[in-house]
Image 1: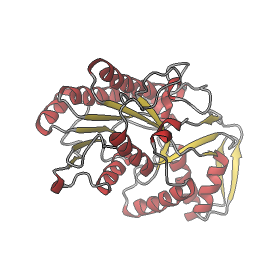
Image 2 (image 1 turned 60 degrees about the horizontal axis):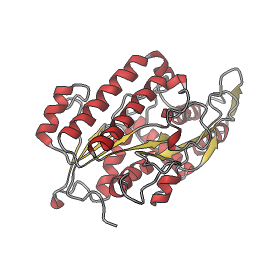
Image 3 (image 1 turned 135 degrees about the vertical axis):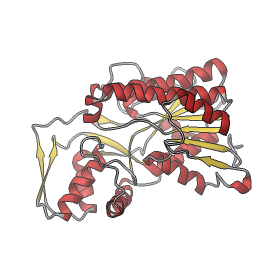
Image 4 (image 1 turned 90 degrees about the horizontal axis):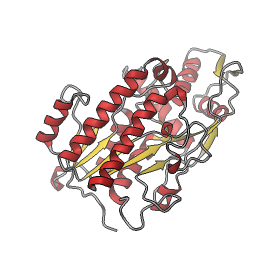
Amino acid sequence: MTKLITKSEKIFIAGSTGMVGRSIKNSLQRAGYGDALNGGQILCPSRGVLDLENSINVQNWFDKNKPSIVIIAAAKVGGIHANNTMPYEFLCKNLKIQTNLIEYSYLNNVKRLLFLGSSCIYPKFSNQPILEEYLLTDQLEKTNEYYALAKITGIKLCQSLKMQYDFDAISLMPSNLYGPGDNYHPLNSHVLPALIKKIMNAKLNNINTITCWGTGSPLREFLYVEDLAEACIFALENWDPNQKDAPKDLHGDKLYWLNVGSHYEVSIKELVELIAQQCNYNGEIVWDFSKPDGTQRKKLDTSRMSNLGWKAKVSLEEGIKRTIKAYLNEKELNTLRV
């Protein structure tokens, strides 16, 4: 099957300094993209060079650099506390970033655009596992509603450009991501990096007991960031919603976004035990039942991506092992994102 992109592409990664963007850059290079001998190039401008919230700045950068492929991995992200206390920033900043990048990609005749969303776009009480067509069928989870609204708008911008102008824009919705370069901020981090920091801190400081929220019963699906990066390349190379054999929804209509996940569920209790094992932590784990559990189950249906020929390769155990190693290295080098 002929690939939809070539090694000679000029690829722009928006958000290249973040966990996802860096992993995408590394995976592209391993796959042979960005090799000047093949005419390829990977563009990773710094924030000092390109302010993604500034429309004029983005327009001028596109006019000058003219990428052929755009990958949008840039976003303002954070955990429950950050979403609850900064709803305006999560909505406004993400809308600006997405709109600028998508609009100027279209106006500059970019060959293919890939937008990265989030599993939080789906309703709080979706049937499980979550199909792509469940989008906008019920209320969102209140704790990340504004971030989700921004991501939904990005998806719909890509879909509308594809439908109205046949602009080649596609979107992927990953499950809970983790990996090297993750955010370990005490208030803004997600559950897996927060647990690594908590447990490793207890290990290094000889703390005999740690306390975790809730009952530990909720089920979650985690995806190693390198697997997502590989999925991005796979989608850019192989998936066009207009193709006859492209995935369709339950009504036989085209799908403009696809779920990406590991296809493996784990309870929060099992996750804590696995991280403790990988950290060689033998202390007591106490569960504070007075704290909320959150949504009991959240798992994406990833059958459409699987049917295209992609699946995750890194097991949760191996991914956690790699992430802990990276955490300790980043801590030693004082490069942790905190």
